[in-house]
Picture 1 (cartoon, rainbow, N blue to C red):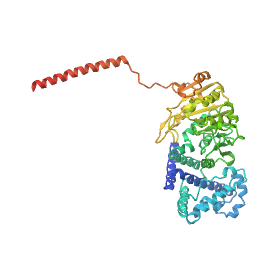
Picture 2 (cartoon, rainbow, N blue to C red):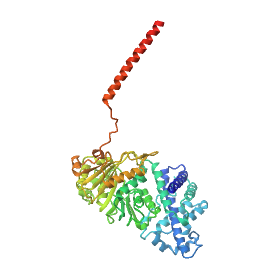
Picture 3 (cartoon, rainbow, N blue to C red):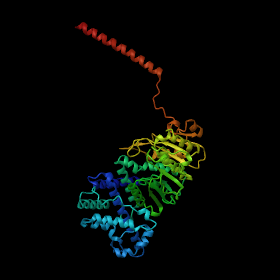
Length: 522
């Protein structure tokens, strides 16, 4: 009952937050405006986070009346070096969210004030261990954009509303800060923005239910992992799910990811901070994973979870260096230039630890297409790297109705068999998209963990069976569809038809007799 009440309160909070966020944007498209709401939310979070950290230390030392927000900037400067080392950043009292917001309505240069504050926060980390975590973090928060208004006055008016709106979000008092509330609200807002943005949203955010399934598949048999990695990490929701599934301290060395889109890369780093992941526990890079991977010194990874872009173009054979790249060379062939799917898969496999698991969302075409893709499938099957193939239901993702699949890879398999699961019916209908309920996820994970043979649901295929099927990995090739058509008793059906025909004859004779009687009377 308590859980139900808590969930209801959470939903009410979410609705209130979305109402504020939606009202703030005014005439601006929500997708374009998300960076302002999410960026302001982050500014509030790190302000309250550092303020609470300093206050707590002073209170414990006996300064019951101390309040960092009231301290002079000159006095605060003395603590800068220590705070950068401990927290990774520093904010002057005058530049805290609460103080900038308090002065905002009277600040005719609010746009310049905010620009200066954001620059100072980023610069505070320069030369320190946290520099890469903060560099360019506010680049997408353009205080001089026409999207905010045609004049400086109009833009500042919108910025005041932004500060007030985010302050109104009920995310816990500064004294008993609820980390979960910030991280949870941020994820909810990203879900809402993604669901309203079509294709763009799908590239930026993996729905929570799919993240849960992928991570739980990857976590089977594990109580902890060294590191979690996502080669196409988007806004980081998949990476962070590992902590929820495995536990707070079960990801020992942190979270690693790469993202090609700068805006999404910034949102991912913000997402890490809002989930209380310290600057020394994550390393997110911005670059093309396939041609310029940034984590050579960090691999291998125990857990890789990913939802890479489907069938995008890449350099492939046009780049002569790639065929000798240690990630792609073992297959003897590169993924086609027009379809990079298997390049992401080979990259993930190369960086997987001996006892690790990779769970990757894939476009279904990679399971059966010929040419180079068939050769790569042959390499993966011959070397016993494919642990499981799962067919998902359609319409799970934002911006596409495609029924995708999941490829689970392992390096240290015990038996040369591949499990196929047909989960195409495992969903519940939602307003715009189908979604995976807890019982759907549970059934899929249970079948995977148990390597179970379940009629019309899962099949454990030996190597020879896959070889005989020409290395086709489509789930429908291995899991027989249930025949839901009604069985018809032909003998009984014929008897019923004869009965109907006989009855029809009797009715005709009755009608003829009635007509005769009418004619005689006439």
